[in-house]
Length: 289
Image (cartoon, rainbow, N blue to C red):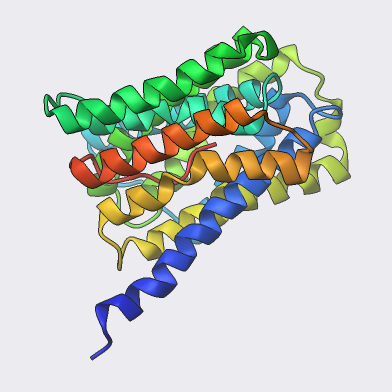
């Protein structure tokens, strides 16, 4: 019989691959903002990933009740809003800082309702991290910060609705349908943007690459990993997202952060790891951003 630790090894590797690819995708996306608007790019990303998921999953539509459809509709709205908001934030502030602020959403969800001093200490540590970012607020666009907060709130809703969707839709069916809902939801927003780049084969190809890196690969990695990892362990690994985002911003986009900003990111990462290990949050959902 295979030792449990040996079984967890490849699963942990899959999660780390997912974290790396989703932030790499964010870096690639930000480098395209001079050629296509954040709204246009996030629509292209979601459209490409939805197409892949629909082809792979081939979801079953018949036989669904009203609750099934309301659940997946809410999941799709949270998915679309989360991705749209974080791309708006990426276009205004560094990726690492945007994801750090966004991560407050899942962290707040993990500690919601807890009255234990230990859990409140993690919240205080995360608040310290955000406060450190605020100490250098002159370097941050307040609109970008607001979009990151909106993305964080949407991420919290996404986690809750992901769990409900997973119970009512088999396999990747719910995610595939929710992705289609997100695309349809964001389609009207293209009316206020330059849609010329959406007809450029190069931009379409790069958008598809972003969709694979930021959606299809990490979602698939986490789906496989969850079969071998406890949700709590997955949550600890996902806590590396802000640090991974900062590294992607540095290596792919060339975004330099100050020591204070790195310290702020470290505070949020440590707080998230601590909160995940000492509380029982909802089952982690696929990667955001």
